[in-house]
Image 1 (cartoon, chains in turn cyan, green):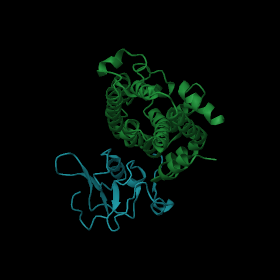
Image 2: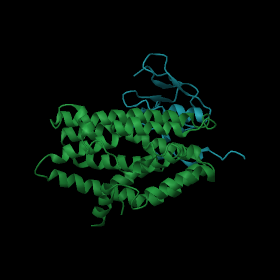
Image 3: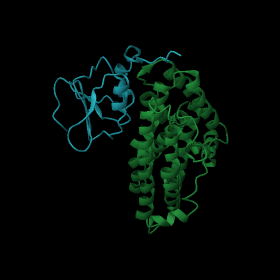
Image 4: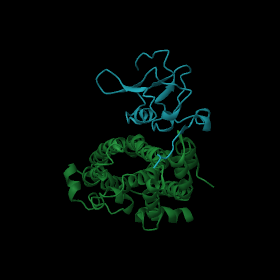
Length: 99
Length: 250
């Protein structure tokens, strides 16, 4: 596991992650862009300082691999998402485009 | 009364959603129709697993792997699934680029699962070479209508139709695998289930995400609902699935 910056509230545990890239897709979809491809070979995904957790928990709702996204401050796994992180207030509004 | 395996799956993976809005609302509303089906899947899978455990021989291991190969082997994973990448038209390309990447990932996952089932048959001594399977009708034939979205017969199908199929049917796969893992201790069988579970979870999540994120208008939702309507018909799934419903009634 790579050394985790204390400023980044979440990190990816690569021993649990299956590199499905759902977190990357979701984070980019909502224009936060905090999931990046790590500079080392192997094409692993990392979370960077643009992450605004706990203000956003969207990646946690679409990650299929238990234990793969971890809360930096506590070390607790957030996949599957604990009830305190999938509240209605934290959902991103997704509206139909104007025709 | 819901099976605990299903309730756990619903609470952890189905109900949590990252988006509010018409896509998530549509998915959660439609999900209510699937709960009895999913419950039957769990009941049927547990019943079948217990029957197998009490079997006098190990033919069921071989037959399970043959069935897995027919569902995920080269005729399905490489040829037929690849046509799904063609269902995104040129004008839709920008909108569905991530959808295509998820599909491409799934093609590779299913390629691996085909190899996994072949590996089980090789390790168990039922075949000497994988190529034997390509001439075995038990392993090289896929007639399950639930996989219609994967067939080369319908490459024109709307890109989001497959999202509906992923959501409903990959949940079935995950529930079935969880049911097997809850009762089976045989290392070869656990290997066959464990080695694919996380990837089947990804395929389910793929459907969930695509519906929540992309199915925002009635026009987007209509092809998904059509898939759900199709798969929920008695003939929409294979005879093996119909048996699950029978077991659940007992």
